Image (cartoon, rainbow, N blue to C red; front, side, top):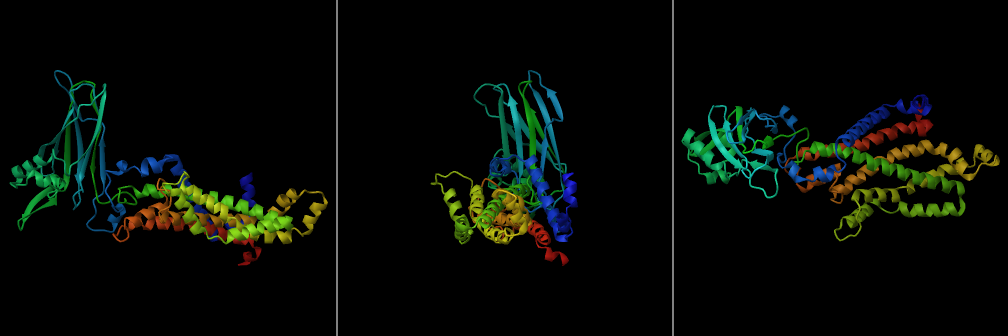
Length: 490
């Protein structure tokens, strides 16, 4: 019933009639929908536990563009690939105890570039005896050549009581156990002599040896990517029937990643950008609602009471209105971020509090000027004559007259708050534990992303900041005919 009344309301029909209003509401719906998705699917401490945790991004390519650039580039950039195997292809029992688990990872390579590196993860290797599991790795290439025993990994003996649990991350580049086997493979199959030291120093990348066909041109050794199907076989020898491996993951570190690419730490920028939606909405809505409420209350009280109350409120407004907000925000956030400061509060909270404390004065002055002619209207005098209290007159009779303007101002204050946070974060004074659009821009500036051509790190957060601002500007413009009836004839 309430929704039906809203839809039938004349002011709403005037508002929704505008194309600008419809665009603003559509943009706002998208922001709210994404914010709900983020709150429902991401942890509240995403910034600290995920975004600021470099271990979680260690396997990702650094400064990689989004994968959709392949629609516009030739040759295509290799996309990042992660393959996780949790169940063995075969399990064999061993006489005397233990088992042999065989895991098979199949990867098809179809690019003109090599992976930046190959990362192998052994996850939750669990064993119950002092005889630790042994994992032997071999590779079958598309040309049917096989690299036997690329390396052998043995879990280290762990102190304490069983079960013992180990996880290991192996970067094939610079992994000393693999270099001798790769050197032997080149000599046996191609009669090319490369010392293990040259492979370990990455003078001759291990990834190119595994996935490439060598050629010698002008006495220089070069590798051409070998396209086709690669089969990586992992044989896990355990010494107890209870031993097992939680899973094996292989990462072929590509040169393009995800919908929005990565930054210099390998962080998925798409996650940071969508996490910025609820943060922007929270800052904008909380600031605008509180600022509007204080300003409207102060303006109505000042205009209706007059006298000393009016004079006091207006002088306070004059003082606050002449204080430049940006330098004040910079000063307050700098004090809070100072390691020597005893004030432990998030810079985002400081930004919101400063905007509220110093942002209501302008609205109070305007509302006062609107209340002055309203309070002398006959219906106000009739209410006073009927015995209505001052509070009833102010909130029952005066507030409805100025409510459309107040609501329009509340909408208009929202982008100002979002832009203020972005400006402070861009200056390096924001909260580094919370990925906001301003924080992402600031990180790109520090890493000289624009100078290095990492446009996917700079343009999307800038567009989203403008998107949020335009959303509320459109809604505010749509409210203008509601606030000012003379504009309805346009």
